[in-house]
Image 1 (cartoon, rainbow, N blue to C red):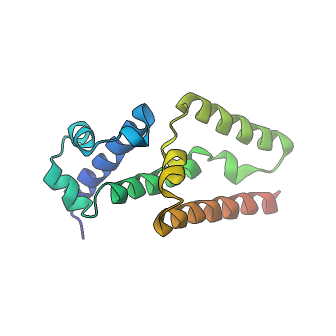
Image 2: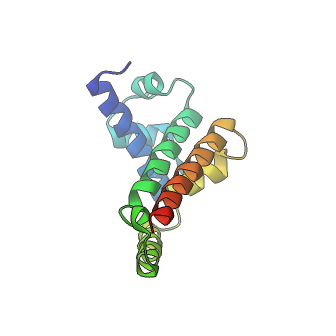
Length: 141
């Protein structure tokens, strides 16, 4: 169980790794760069991610999956008219246009999703949550 300080440190590491991926792509991410950006040392990186870089990348994928759903609200929960559907679509498209080509979730799922059951689980959970939210919104309309 992590303390509040431990949770904050772990989140800072994950956020730093996500930023590195956005800027440089997953192949260029080095633990030294993540440590520098998160103001943590290698011992802290391996304390929170004892299995190494792949475990860190999976944590980034989980964080980014949550962010994907958060980015679509409140539109996703209010798909009650064609105008609402268009607003949702336009908001999502604009968000990812601004984000650019190095979407951490997309890159991570592409890179590690093919090889690890854990990454496939993250993808499956994201899609299931998205489908549930979308279905609830549609059933309300």
